[in-house]
Image 1 (cartoon, rainbow, N blue to C red):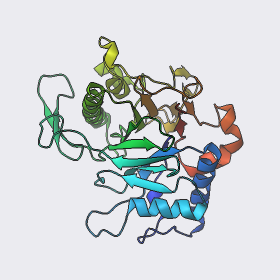
Image 2 (image 1 turned 180 degrees about the vertical axis):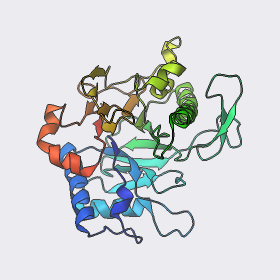
Image 3 (image 1 turned 90 degrees about the horizontal axis):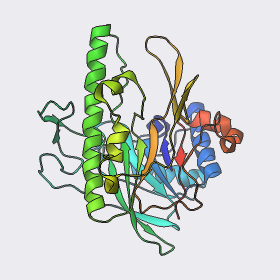
Length: 328
């Protein structure tokens, strides 16, 4: 399960205990209700509670374990990889009776283009033949998953890529420049993720890539200027079929209200219209087989029948809807 839990950090005290304000309690109850209803074995969490790298007081794993214990969730264990520079962490929650996870970072220390995710890297994000220097603001989480049922180990990569959103006032010229810059940063981050995918494919690993990619095929006008989306960068090259990943959500459709299925909703900066967007994804390698032949599910209560009974808690829990995929 991939789940962006909107500003989950706001629900925890500095000692990693749960806040008891009405707002925090309502959100914590809603998140717990969503996880209980969907009942995943493993959750890739984005916008998780903070880990502080200076004072060491805030701890993502401690906060998530406290949350699971307080709400009686079976996903009672948690982990992170490299902490982010901000308050939103990438983490995993999981049922320790079903699987165990271990941080397993790849890359080569000091490498110019493919170092570990907590190091700066070079990428030609605009195809001008010049590599620029980038760094993941939220380093993707890489973990090895060991199954308690004796099934083969696999790997997960949980990402929260650069947002293309622009949240400060500016004129149209500066808006264009900021949009272009943000997409180049997004492309650079996803190109870095694709290099890790290539490493894993070369090593014969089976794996899942999930998270908030902040993009999707055909998402906006700026994508057409580059001829691709960030998700397609991760999926791979159509001229290298052996290196292509699978997209179990299936082809989204654009309709009256935006994309279907959709995991989030945004306000158009110019028209003021609400637009549905598919920006949270689950992508798998060929070695990951579905348990029942079905594709991934986007738990949007306005679009998925199975999600309709849980509409209110899904809306109260986050401004994103979770994505699930059952594997054999």
